[in-house]
Every structure is written in structure tokens, then in C-alpha cells.
Length: 135
Length: 140
Image 1 (tube, rainbow over the protein chains, first blue to last red):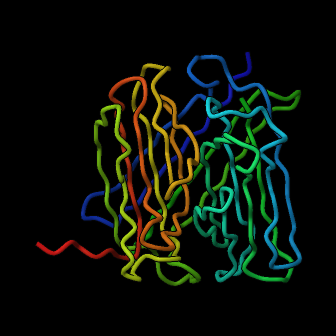
Image 2: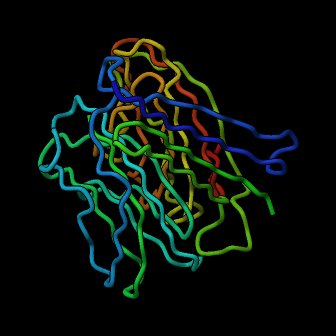
């Protein structure tokens, strides 16, 4: 069985008067059991050249249904502070991924419309790094 | 300026070559490299099954709308059949199974873009943190 882990560390020494130091590791498993996730897109890159909305992950392309434990990793590789991708799940905006920021979240492709979409803030070249881990 | 760093490491032996992805970001206010997110809320709650709750309320004050807010949610439950369903507005984003965590930018683009949570399987134990530029307190 493959073993996939995701570790996050949140740290700050000056946001509060006490230090923030939070580390959590998840071993990524299939929905409702302890079997490791079995699929991945591998690490990829998408460079956009217009401010149109793009489908990054099409819900129809992966094992579907609400009872899945897919995970998505995204990183905006831009170094221009004002450049961001708006991340959406179908028609619902999740948030803005600014230059250098990353995100990691579960994906429920519960129906064919539940695509993960990205909209660059600029029409010039901007690159998103991504990886999908599938159940 | 407050400096808050979020780092992630992904490792796997799923492929014939090992996956090892590491990156970090300093959590800045939207569109700047000069000013870090300087306000936060953090908590731990136990959520019973049966109701969809607002974990984070998207007030439409303009303080946090369409900014670079960051949200961390971790399901500290240990029973692998337990999960918390995460919804923004009326859209189910995904299921956070026992032991899983997530870290997302939150647009909070309008008053209905709340981050909602519903527990399944049993009472789920949830840790969360919200880094932001400000929020409006509810009048007493």
C-alpha cells in the first residue's frame, strides 16, 4: 500500500505575544478506511496566458461521488505580489491564491459540475503548480 | 509587521520515483510584500452530527472580502469513519476525514460565503485557525 503524507507547519513569533508553532501530519487514506490513496496526477504546471477561467480538474475525469477523499495541492509560482489565481469549485469561489501562496484541500467531485477552476488575475503569463491525489 | 509562515511537505511512494514536495509562504495581506496578515482567530471545537454549522461567518464589512485570508482546519478525530463536510455557501468543497487537514485562501467574497461544517459518524473534534486583515465584531 502506498503511503502518502501531508505535513503543515504554521509558525509565527510576532503575531501574538506567545509564539505560534503548529505542526500536523496527515497520512492520506481513502474515504472511511485506512487504505492509502492510490492515484495521483503527479506534480504539474499550468501556465495561463489570458484572464479567462480554466478548468484545472474536470470532475468527470476522476472517480466520483461524495464519498471520496481526493486531495488537491496548488501553488502560485508568481513572484509579482499583485498576481493571483481565483480558485473555484464549480461556481463557488474558494479564494484568491496570491503570488507564492499554496493551498491544500479535500475535493468532493460529487457530480459532473464539481470542477476545480482557476481564473488568473492577469492576461500575461502566470504559472500554477498543482497535484491531485485521488481516492 | 507580523510574520506568519505556512509550510507544507508532501511525500509519497505512489510512483516509481518518490514524491517529495516542500514549499512555504509568508502570509501577506492581499497584493503586497510589505505587510503581513496581522490578525487571527483560533479555536478547538467538538461538533455533533446532524447540523450544518457556520465555522467562519463571512460578514460583508469589506474588511476581509476578496483579500488574502487564510484558513486552516484540522479534523482531530481518530475514528477513520468520522468526517467533517466542508461547505462554502451552498457548495460542498470536500470531506475532511479523521486526521486530515486543509489550508486554503478564503475569498469571503460576499455575505453568504460562510465556511460551514457538518460532522458525520459521530462528534468530530476540529481545530481551526483564521488569519485575516480584520473582522467586524457583532454589536452587543
